[in-house]
Length: 125
Image (cartoon, rainbow, N blue to C red; front, side, top):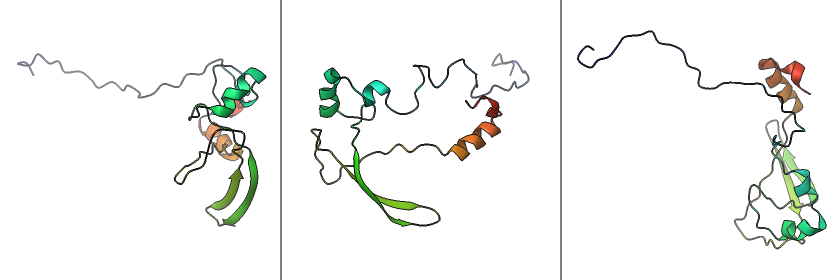
């Protein structure tokens, strides 16, 4: 250690993440709730054409209305649902191999458990 000019010292813990509370709320414009904002969901007449014609991607999805759905089967561990979407108002065409994404909402019970574990239950709303 002398030849390499190294000094011995105690190991000090350095956390990998830091949790900070902020004054932001779910109503703050800087907070993303994982879904498009109201301007995107309810576009003005001027924005309506671009919302129907794309381009579409994970940040600007086509919000296709569900026209039919039925449960095909369910078990203790999963449910299988057949859903049909209306693409007629867009320039989208279905091709074999195409896929869609569904953003499920979080279970209120699971969110409550997480808040309890983190000691943040009193700040839920």
